[in-house]
Image (cartoon, rainbow, N blue to C red):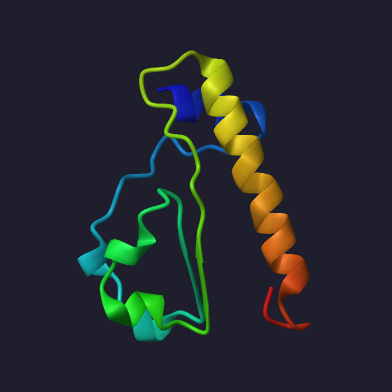
Length: 92
């Protein structure tokens, strides 16, 4: 509920989204992979070998006040913007 609330503040409806297992995705289909937990070294090797792999240690706001969710949202937004700025034209 906290994530839904703070994303709604940003004009994004995630109320129908769900968590998905990593096994539902094929790493070869992605040029970039980002881990948000700071534990990316534990991912299968195929994910670590993507042309772009970044391991961001974003604080987990679960169980915290809404401000913690806002901080996580804003941190991710800034990091995504920086990542997109690094990509060659046409890849963002």
